[in-house]
Image (tube, rainbow, N blue to C red; front, top):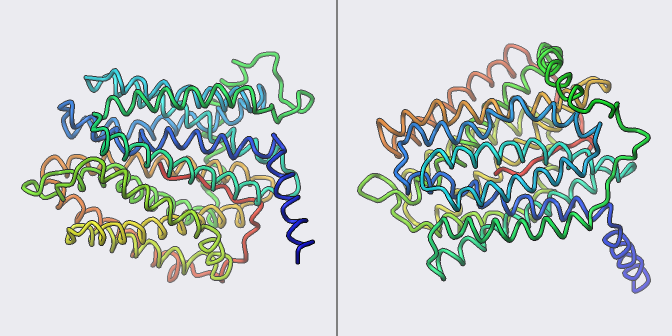
Length: 436
């Protein structure tokens, strides 16, 4: 037993002494630290500076609309210039976005910050996924798992810092943005000197004209997207992804308003730091259960788990309206997060399973496109409801809309075009991304 423990400890130590394998984990921590602060509090800051609800909805949607056009070309661009320039351009954009929020007393500057965060996400995430595949040839799934545990740790740290600064030091949101911008920038500098480039110069694309290559990537994006989107076996998965992204970003955008809006206006009337507390508890608990959610999909396939988890999501959205206890809200949010995470694992894995091997990367890229599309639709469609009816009717209507789409997808999947249960997952092909 002692010998086995010694061998395991040696493997663990050797793994984390490998800079190329530890780098994506550390990048995930720093990247999601910044994103967790931005995602949780940008909407509340817009509200604090007197922005109208329609403008808030448009700005929140733009974060995803930009990514519809940026992700695929920038992913291809990293193949020409290497992963490191895109990774650290993304981290720099995150820090600059938080600093812009620190200066922002008008929604125009918040719009600029949102543009920066979208550019950063479009640069950072595809390059990070590619970095993992570059450095780990034989066990990609294992390194992906460690990387996304790092992103969970970044979310925990971001939520904890926000809670402490707002609750204990009574700092306004703008000071929170300034402090975390500085912290993420300093961390990014240290990582810049630590993280090695993963893509060998000899296997890069044509680097003689980088700008021309970027334009070619933009030009071919939609024709390539159409090729995989027309495949019937992938089309239904993309429909599920749109509905899932719609409800997930609805919660990301509007849950903080439900928690902090006064009781007189239908909200819970809780202080701003409560949002960070809920996110902190949520991330701290779920970090231990990700492998379990993956095993559920391994065992039961695609159709049954995603039908159940999306139904749970609709029920939790409605349930949040009728409860007022913080403990119960935390429990409901945990159930919701577990359900959405399982749903994302299902769509990611089913896409890689159904796609042709030669088109697998393109199919996953298309999945990301529909992710951004669903998220964009969410705030654009539901913000007018919030403005005209209030926060409680907004949550009820959102739950009903999601339920209707679940019924439609159920009919399409189980009645019109029934298929056998999905095969098990090849974990090496999974591509996940934290909800931010």
